[in-house]
Image: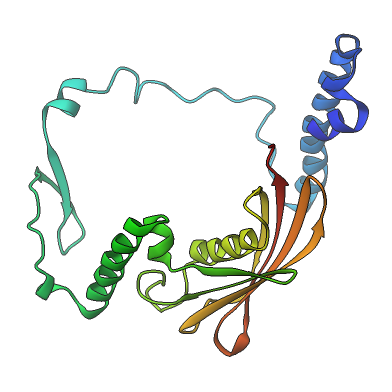
Length: 239
């Protein structure tokens, strides 16, 4: 519907009141035309089955007026799994905090990184940026970035988490432009796992206009293996 709107004027047409029935009819054609085409192709090939034109709505009986508000807010309950996998309800209780000497080695590393990030955030910046460890700086025509891989940003096999990888690319792309620019869109392609002790990013400005800029970023890991390709667009902030 939006594609039709933008292509043929749509809601931006001064004569929208005269074309609304056309919009409705085009929408019906696209939706039900697609259903019909799928049925014509799918039924003979055995990929779809005809079950009638309409069907009865599901019954409301299983859930209608079934919520016990008093019990929901009046009791604190917990559920746990037995070794056999069955569920058992019981009274909830707070677990005791672990002592630092009870933590595993990787857990102690994460705690140390969190403490360092808290201390750094007192001097400026955000805790989460210091915790992830994004280190970015501008270079001629772009920017460079890196972060140290570890248990605080990696999964159970040591690969950099996908969201953190994307965050490194965004942070590096943003560093390529002055602070008067803000991120407006991201397109990213995950290519391989983020392996290695240090994950690096390189950004290059491929378009720098008056109001819009485009930055291409490549993220690499161990043995300079490509981890992600990213294209970001940036809009100039109104002064």
